[in-house]
Image 1 (tube, protein in one colour):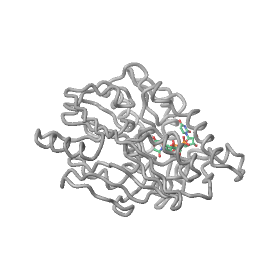
Image 2: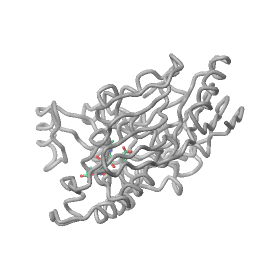
Image 3: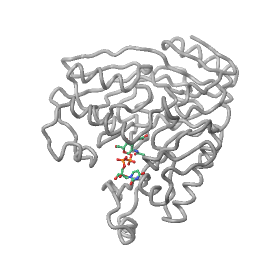
Image 4: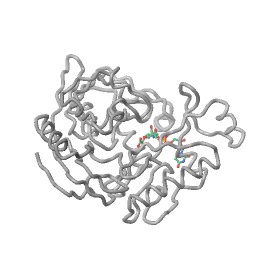
Length: 337
Ligand code: EPU
């Protein structure tokens, strides 16, 4: 286990904002995790599982222990079409490895930044597929009881960008590994508009072609965090009632929307684009010029500047459309806006 006190977190958050943690622990295995958690407990430090820091905005310093799971390993069970992955593996590399082994289904989730262990925490999703579809179970360390637990899909309580793992922030459950069941016979999910367009409506698509297309689409719209600090979509896509969506239709010719239980899911990016936010600059922070739901660290932005920009965006969409946007990104050091 590697411990650093008063650690600089700039390299450990994809917004690349300056922040410090009272302690940063790099964890190699479950034993080390147990030791780190009891050390934090003995010093009364809150815990923050950080993964690759791709879904977090630091507005202030973190007064506790940030945990980086560095355990590695991807094991395949070809007979059962299963894969077990350690939390510290990179998610995209897992997608690539599964593709190479002829196990399919998660190609739509290619290039999502972050670690494999973080994937179930917010039930990552893209281009018509969510992780829960292939999820079997995970092993997590329950900091409240100090024990290792196995959680089934039902226990994880997956929803849109959400899971039961997010519920106890003070004494978190820290994902150690996860098992997925994939498909040998590829059944590509191609209904998402950007993909249907990419393949011109054709369904004769190989998993490799799907993987490549998802990577291409993402690269064309979303900034690479290694080059421009960001955390992907900053807000969740809101769900509107049918009546509210109809009202929007009176104002705009064809607003994009996806039918879901309870209404229509509207892309927050589209809403923010209508408000003129694309490319908007606020100090060192800005809205990406190719996607209005992506906030970027354009020029040494502070977490506060990024948060102020997010609040401005929320106020505008509320005033213009009566829609309250909810952050997808976890905010540390300030009230969730
Ligand atoms: N749009 C605009 N203007 C913009 C941005 C988008 O008009 O500035 C329109 C697009 O033209 C399109 C629609 O909004 O018609 C949807 O845009 P996009 O396909 O980029 O998807 P999204 O709804 O903005 C969601 C996820 C992404 C995921 C994509 C693809 C959320 C919060 N975001 O974005 O996930 O990659 O769908 O499935 O659900 C993330 O979670 O960090 C993330 C990037």
